[in-house]
Image 1: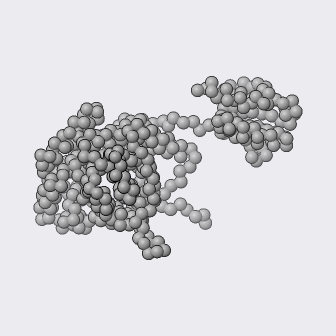
Image 2: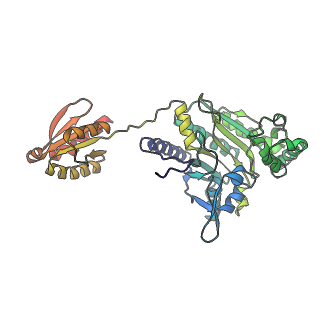
Image 3: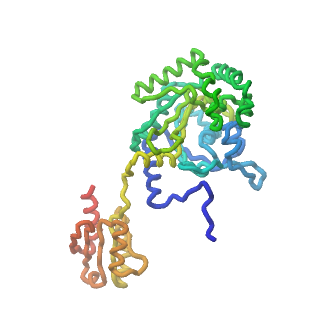
Length: 426
């Protein structure tokens, strides 16, 4: 029996991987415009990083992490998200000491979560994210949201909704926390075990529960917006004012939460409103965190960022029937007949490729008709055809596959001829 791929993973094959490459290139292009630099961190980290950086009350830590002991007895975890690793690198490499602040970083990498696989969700998935560390300016909150929106729009998505909320500062969060405990405590036994455990540790997480989201107490839960102090209100007003200045439409949702203790002020999500996209509409989530770097051993440093799944992005593009702008074709196919011609084709193919021409030839000793069929399957724009007799004369036949037009060219001019044709197509 053939060994099967692990559940919740996927093979990204030629013909599909080009979509990923296009999206990744577009993300890098947008980040360059916004002056975010790429960072690459290890796929596995110390488990303690995620216990402290993600939070031990989260589903990610409690249920979804791939954790193992190495041969030295150290507990390691395949990274379930990117922010904690970026913050750890920021501390380890003393990026806070750079005179250029904030430190603006982006990453594209594989993440791992043991959760139930479903449409657009995998146990191994690719996440793109950005982090801006070292600034309390509300304009960078707007910049982070704008970057995400710009990426989606540059990829052809139009059916988007930006949802934003404020979690307030530490004082505001504490007042809201107390109100939530008082609200839920009398009937907490009606909630799931996870929510019962969260009541004292992190009651904000109750609002994010999928099992109890229809409970009547959810609809009447105290809103964080009613507990914002003056400083937090001013901060939030500035963020949304900047969004309006940038022409970004948004909705304020007081039930939008980021459940980790170090999240403060801005929280946001970007959703797809396309029909047929699925019940889970969130494409991207992010927020401001003002205690994460300190939690993992660095100086007190404000930060904000977001992360999105490439898989869900592709699903959203497919739901909107976005066409990817690339061709699955080659420039030239070399058809060679005869022993000497086949030997010569190896060098000709090499020269074509050195000249920047995407070229291919037969490797299975096929007849001429079969070689032309192979050229058709590869959607070759041109074929170079020659045999031993043509080599004697120093010529080749070059055929334009779309029109069928064919002409004889000196062998030594074949590469230059195809190069000129390709330049003329641009």
